[in-house]
Image 1 (tube, rainbow, N blue to C red):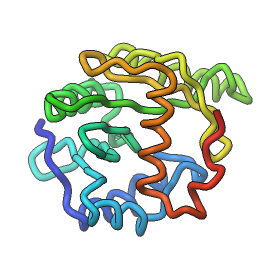
Image 2: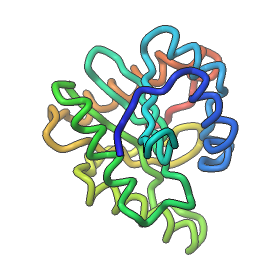
Image 3: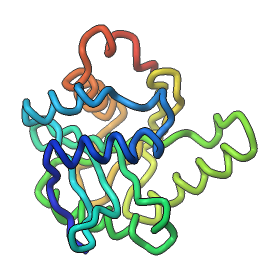
Length: 185
């Protein structure tokens, strides 16, 4: 398995075939927004490759050595085989030297059903097992309650700095009409 940077064509294929299935509609940015951010050099897309086959992907907003994980997923047919952990392990190696790497994960304490809580708890615990920690910062983005996690072995930031970084990343990729009011602290 090897982590590789994806082309715009590969990103479009993942978006159309996987991302629209892997993530709820309210968490999906338009493909045009992703492509525009790639063209600006502020969005990096990686694929975990098994030969020529993309078995997992991670899309990141990248600004001045600060990274926000936007999407991360493994092919459903290949889950529970350690590929998600391998994807994150290789990502951390690829970003060695970066200032920070943060991500948002749905807050299981705010789940609406026991099934949602179970799924969100599994996701949250997955990141904790794979070198991320809970920063204690919570936000609501487009009405979805999230906890902000940060990768271990990167710069530690206080609450105000984490929120500044979080807003900076969203402001950079979203048109002002989408960004305005999307994040509630």
